[in-house]
Image (cartoon, rainbow, N blue to C red; front, side, top):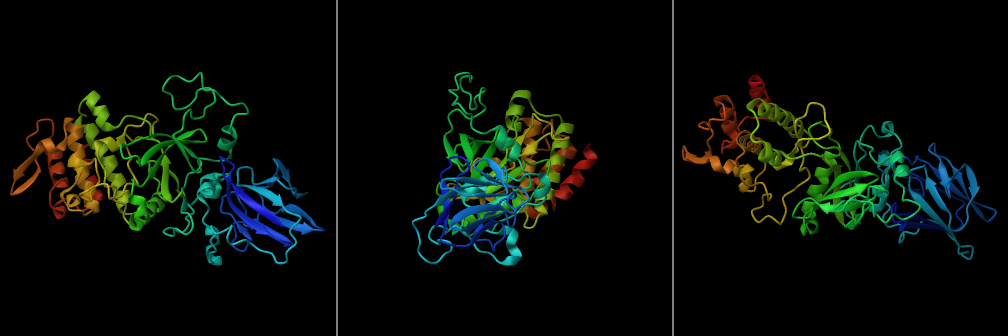
Length: 464
């Protein structure tokens, strides 16, 4: 009998096993008619075949990216008990266990051991099987050409782990080799006090926990569902559900649906999304870490922005919202506010601000049903537990008030025409033209606002 055990990419612990007895050939690859189906961009449709010849198991490479046995590339070689087989230079590792004492008749996959394997129809072979959380995190394309489009695995089924691959192959072979564990343990003595990453070895000093292939460095919010994490020399953001929300199937499904959409998207005004996966029953969305001060902190230090800069920033946001709102289905951000707008230290074209805070959904931790921390940037309908694309336009208008005045929008609420609403016409630092746009954006009645983000862009352009 031969047993193939998929190993965790970081801890090298068993993730999933398949056992075969006297089977003349066992194929491994992406295609669903293999005996062992593994999804990875570097794994070929038919990558490798394990054959039993004269009571000797041997491996035969079939794929274009190569097969490695105990670190050496092989075309055909005998297998021994305890060997490690790697599919491609940066692909999954499989440990070999050979038990010569087993002579029972019959062969095939052990369903109890390989319960994570999902069989799909032939026309969906690119989706093959949903990988385990650990394998999800180890998927590493060898080139950008192999990943021109995101590959989406089925969502909403919790019998097998959730995984979505984004457009950006950040964790490729070069990073895997450059950030392999050091041969001698580092004591991190040379790292400055308070550092999260060691300046000597480049690895995290005291990670809080390990989630898949990611080492968590610190939480980024008070709810603990947005985390700074490290992988392969890169600092990223892990987004997940808030405490208790993962127990509600509808919220899990909504989070996964949003993650699936975001991994398809590409725009200079938003972070890059690398992947989404499930770990120990919790879904995670991984995106680029945008380094720089947020506009709330920046304005608190520098003072309000000049009008022309505010108009430029508003144009960038309105164009991004037009992009998001015209997706199928439309993506509603829900959390547009100064603290979610980052002035990037590393230039991103002409962008003055990058919108972050994606992936949040309404959850049980907010009694009103609306998101916490948004406050006076929420539209009236959001307070009534309703969301629409026009709610993002309201938040944009409220954000412009802060950028122009350095004060929170709730300082400018007044009773007018039987509505308690934002009134900015009399603020000296806001021109009548901009004030008119803000008041239309923040009208209490959605149908009185601009009809779309594209209409907001059209209204702002003459002000430059």
